[in-house]
Length: 509
View 1 (cartoon, rainbow, N blue to C red):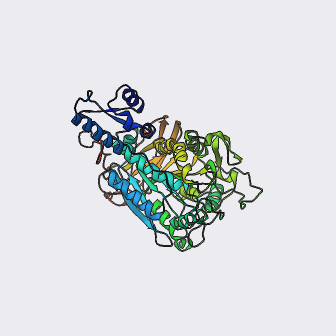
View 2 (tube, rainbow, N blue to C red; view 1 turned 90 degrees about the horizontal axis):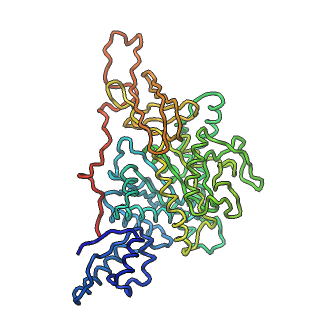
View 3 (tube, rainbow, N blue to C red; view 1 turned 30 degrees about the horizontal axis):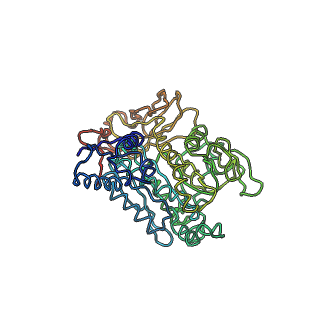
């Protein structure tokens, strides 16, 4: 009994032309099946025996099981954990669950990873993350990330080529809840409660988006008087100055070379990009400061924010929740100045470009609103992930082809550098154009090249740096190991996605 895999429209056109799929069984199911993106249609001749009818009936039941619609509801902590492990069990070959730490009350901060090699950084494959529910009472981001997790798994199993390519070329990390303790307090009230801010903070009463080390003041000083423009160091006592959830996220950022990120919030509908803290910082008040404070990558951040806004169902319209934001985007400091926030910290302490997505007027939407919100955000969530594949990337090696860990990549005219990862690969998001790019490493001569960036795939720009020979080194044999903090092993070439070896894992039917 052969099966055909058809598009939803083709499937239902054919289904309406035949009585094979038993219309009385399909009543009310079309919308559910259409929403899944694919449809299986049994290719049978008109059945003439009772056994054939029974076979058709059983296959129709199988069809409904295969394309069972998503459920839209709020998930308490135990439900969230069960949902993550359900996705893990359905797509075991492309997912991994790990904890980055615990909340004040001991709840795990679980991350679900999607990759064709879970748990492994592949050379020249970028890392991207989503963080939800930083404020416990802002529940929509948490639910959207759970829906996204299920969607990625199901569409990969359904051979959705776009999703297959995304997972095979990107390592995706999803943290549905950074503040599970606060969420439990908010959920105990429910959407109808009057305590608007109950659950916003963590169990110690601290706002986690005002809890990161303040690096803006150092960057503003360095920008004026000279000094590092990225990877700014933290105070020696930083761990004692932040909450357990914040500490876990910072250590997570330090352990993985993230390239792109978004954190999901509620209470407005707008894509907010750095900087959040104004040069003339004031606390939020009824007289909001309107001092735009752009980063050196302001045009790129605007583009990233617009990608999400215009792929969203209504964010780009601008008028939402009683506010107006042209194109549905805003510079954070232009809206109101925020100190010690996470998106500025990402940009100043790591290689990661992070934006804040405000996604709903109601911070804790009613359950019946969740499906509409998912449909409004689904395409935007996917398109934003795809933005990590732009700009330039490559390897930084010495003359013996050893990786140079910690090499710095600078772009002329943009006062923000990035640093190569532990295996010597780097990623630099850039808009289309022609750039002068320089790689430097301690003990090596810098190298400068001109690179042209197109609108699609990133441009591959590799660097081979030559060691400096000082007078003290003259006449001495140059050792192979040592300088620049490089990895001594020969660099791996990126794994080729051999279709004969690595077919997408479909998982159980």
